[in-house]
Image (cartoon, rainbow, N blue to C red):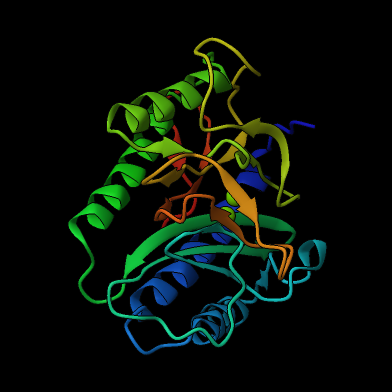
Amino acid sequence: MIYIKSKEEIALMKKAGQITKGALQKAIEAVKPGIKTIELDKIAESFIRKCNAIPSFYRYNGFPMHICVSVNDEVVHGIPGNYVIQEGDIVSIDCGACYKGYHGDCADTAFAGTVSEDAKKLVDATRESFFLGMKQAVAGNRVGDISAAIQTFIEGNGYSIVRDLEGHGIGANLHEGPSVPNFGTPGKGPKLMPGMTIAVEPMVNLGKYNVYLDARNDWTFKTLDRSLSAHYENTILITDGEPVILTTL
Ligand code: MG
Ligand code: MG
C-alpha cells in the first residue's frame, strides 16, 4: 500500500528523521578499531530514547537489537554483538527511529582506521548513487527512474548492485509501498506523487551482486563471493519540486 502523507504527518516524519540521523551519526562517529558492535548499538539506542523516540528495528519481525551493524562482506541486517571492529574494516550502520508513530530510516558506511583504496571508492560510489537516484525522485517520474539511475552509475563504475534487497515506502510503517529496487527500467513502476515518503538505499558490492542469508542467525545477508559491501540510505519526501531528505539533522 502506498500512502500520501498529510502536512501533519510530514512534520512528524521530519522529527523522526532528525532523531534517526542523529542516532546514526553518533554511532558512525564512534566507529574505531577496538570497539564492539554492541557498543555502537547502545550509543544509538540511548540517543533515540533520550529523544523520546523508539528504536524502529527492535523486535521488528523479531530482530533482537536496535540498529544493524554490517561489517565488510556483510551487506545488511548484521546483528550487533561481541565482534570487535578491526583496523581496516568498513562498517555499515542502519538506523531506524519511530517518533509519535512515524518512522525514519537511514544508513551509512564508516571506516575503522585506514581502509583500502578499493573500500574508499566503493563507499564513495554507493553514496553518490543515492544522490543520483534521489535526483530522479520527482513527481511525475516513476520508481524505475530512481532504480535505473542508481544501477547505471554503479555498474558503470564496475561495481554491482544487490538485487535481493531494496528500498521501500515508509511512514506509519517502517516498510510500506512502494518497493524501491536499486536496479530497473526508466519509466516503469509506480508513479511518484507529492506527499510520498520513501527510503532509497543502494547496497553495493565490490564483486558480484549475489548475496546469501547467514544460516547462523537467519538475519544477516552477506556477499556470496565474500567481497566488500557498502550501504547508504535516507528517507526522502516527494514534493512538487525537488525531493527533500527527511533523515537530516
Ligand atoms: Mg535502513
Ligand atoms: Mg530501509
